[in-house]
Image 1 (cartoon, rainbow, N blue to C red):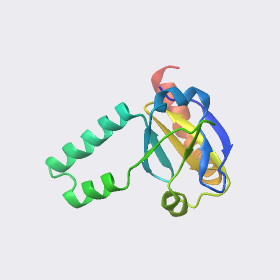
Image 2 (cartoon, rainbow, N blue to C red):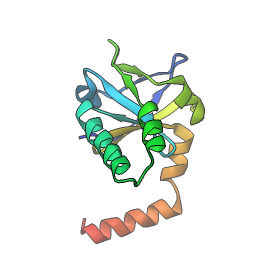
Image 3 (cartoon, helix red, strand yellow):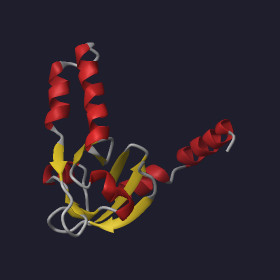
Length: 141
């Protein structure tokens, strides 16, 4: 399970250090693709679940084969280097407007890698605070 939030720098080659608690899940390899404002990273087992959902959506005609193809073609395999870094695809970094600072955030079955300023905007709004308060109350936490 992926949890926690970590701030890191992105180097000129598009490499980011993966926090040590996350490394065991993607020790051999992981899969990345663009999500809603960030890059998602999954372990092989977790990505298989995601890809099977995408495939089922396509087979049930809830998404077109064209969209399924685009989803699958946007995925890249990544591997940890000896320093615990992964190299993020340049096209994803450019499309999402990444600068030198990133936030690496655990989200249960995946990791999200955000441009630091976009993460700040996403997490620190009145709407987010209100939704969090409602969720905590509803869950009885």
